[in-house]
Amino acid sequence: MITLQQLRVVLAVRDHGSLTRAASALHYGVPTVTHHLDALEARLGARLVDRTPRGAVLTPIGALLAEEGEQILARVAQAERLVATYRDAGVMTLVVGTFPSIGSRLLPAAIRELRQTMHVEVELVEGEPTELVRKLGEGALHAALIYDLEGDPAFDAPDLESTPLLSEELQVLVGAAGPLAELDELDLASLDHHWVVSRNDDEVSHRVLRRVGAALGRDFAEFTRTDDLNMIHGLVAADLAVALAVPSAVMPGFDVVMRPAGHDLGLRRLAFVTRDDVQLPAVAALRDILVEAARALAR
Image (cartoon, rainbow, N blue to C red; front, side, top):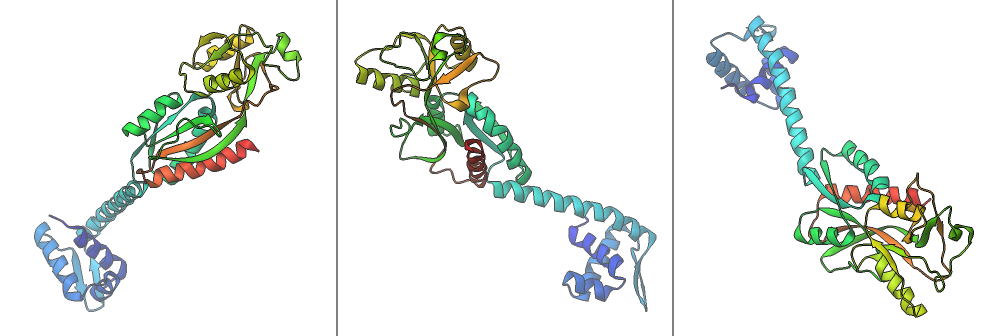
């Protein structure tokens, strides 16, 4: 079998024109170069090098082998680089959890930038925070974008590492053609509209409405429970209900506006969350890219 060392010897002889200079370039001794050439010629049954008093030159067959060998060595080097890149990334397919609103604004560009520096694929899994945190705990995700209530987190856990990305003030999403849009500020104590809230009781919309309702001594009526952003926006645009939202979650194309409340609704925090035992360079690189992207979005 032809070895890579033998091909390198043939190329060195071609490029340097003597066994001595070829040996020096390869950091071999001349006997080693001669051994590789003799073994290769015996293997192929053909003379590859003409040795002359002025040096050594490849025969036509040797030149043909050198041309093919150069391509083979280039492919081997490329394969080594690819393997090293995947090895250094720590993972070949990165599985990242996200939710539709802010994920669609941050992740596509971040993934493109990541793939410009690492040979890594990224698979996205959509879900609400409760589901994504569960998948993180099960090891089904390498990382996730999670939103939570700043100052009252529901998803902090000792085995999760959280990097804050963005904090936004919660406001009320109302229909632009409805009477609430004419107000500069909403009084939740007298607001009689129904609310669209999340399907999960532990998520931000439920927790904030429970807290504010308890402070005001009232309950807020639910219109429906859904996590479908298009449905939420459609219901609000039709003035059938209102919903809690942050500016980054407002979708274009719907006749809705944001209005502040005369009560402290708190801040919704966006974070990049991983398990603390997941120490992968690709995860760290994506985190750093998202931190910069979130700063730009905040500006």
